[in-house]
Length: 246
Image 1 (cartoon, helix red, strand yellow):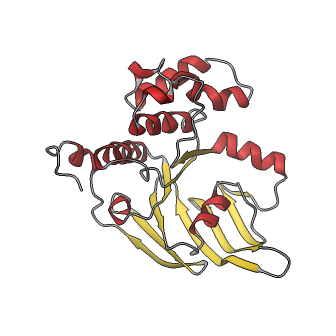
Image 2: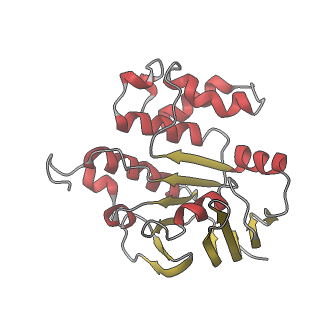
């Protein structure tokens, strides 16, 4: 039996841009990711990395090929079944945080359980998630009262609420300064050390250097797939003197 969390074989995706224009975003992608890996997906604009991320997150369905998530063939599922997988098995973290401005941190973190219809112990779980990312003392603050790094930590706490198999992060440090970026990467590394699977799309080579594996996309296929022998430790960078990060 395969130990892979993600198994992709021959995935293709084509978009129609108007009546006569088509764009083949993915051209037969093959990829396997084991449970507990921390993987960076890189590539220039138009390389297919964002489309691949959407497929992995069950936000988009491929036209051809096979995608198995924890042994389940995803491509044949209904919209309702895809929504169930997104809600129960995948945690999303976005560059723009996607927090609701009228809600405080605790209420934002509770949202996945509100929408999932699970009200049992919701507030307790949300507080525990905020404590996990170091924001237990900010539970009553709204997004406008927090820094970008703090907002992203709230977003990570929200992504953890359903104890997902997979964390998908799309440019999670893109709007942050160097020190805040290191703090976010340290959280992802700590989660990964607890055997959580983390996949992040990034344009930044120094962010990718914190991952154990780097997958580079080009022209809709996996161009390069390499292991990082000694990933950078974000916790060490946080401890560095002010101004030492770059």
